[in-house]
Amino acid sequence: MPLATTAGEDKPSHVHGAEGKTALQAISQGVALPGIPWFTSMEKKRHWILEHMAGAFRVFARKGYTEGMAGHISVRDPEDPGAFWTNSLVKLYPSGGGGILDYLKAGDMILVNEDGVAIGGNKNHPANAAGFLIYSAVHRARPDVHAACHTHSLYGKAWPTFGRPLEMLNQDVCVFHGAEQAVYDDFGGVVLAAALGPKGKGIILRNHRLLTVGGTVDEAAYLFTLMERSCEVQLLVEAAAAGREKRIIEEVEAEYTFKMTSDPESLYCKFRPDYEFEVKMTGGAFKQM
Image (cartoon, rainbow, N blue to C red):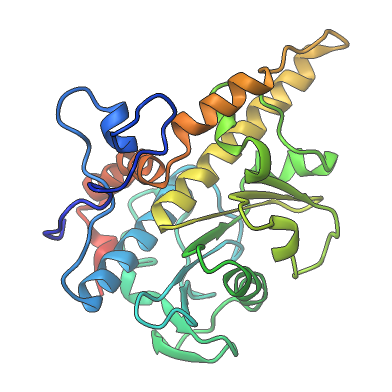
């Protein structure tokens, strides 16, 4: 890991009932978890971003979020905020993560400007055209969004057929409480930034799949894994209900849980176990530039 200081040490806490503490201090007993790092140069930050971007693809592959060439992640460049990094259309990430170490790596990513022109990275490979249309709209509308994830996960394709938001069935899904979740009904459309709204972190694309965004690729990737699992739980509950009444978390409790669990620093940290597992299983091969 790069040498860096922890972000957020002097920031006021966003966690309800933990005044004077950061979100990470509030959830840590004793020494606080290290949060999002700072970097001494843009180049170091860019390298770290691309490593974590490639790691996110490895996590997605191991969880089975793959289908042909479908699936893409975008991350805003730290030095040129009008450009973003995305994966090659032909350099795939292996389904199941099964030991295929010569697939997608950090050095395979492509830097694309706002006009869709490749200006950096692996310019010898094509970027995903549909991915560009989606991400360019989101990145333009939301300066706070630095990363977005959108791929073909199983339950993330099943639940969107209902065109309904996820219900607050348990503590975990409360991360998407309120304005953090949206449903986009215009199947086949690419301009969905307005539907995502000014605060949305996840969107259900009707008859399509899921998209999540975040301040880091780690946050966006964790939210995608959480939204996918929440779709699975929702489908299980719908099947088991069989006419029986569901008990939804009350609004006050959902709001409190949201405040306790939705801080970007915490969401960044929640992706770390999956990321570190990929480092261990691959020997860090996906970090190669």
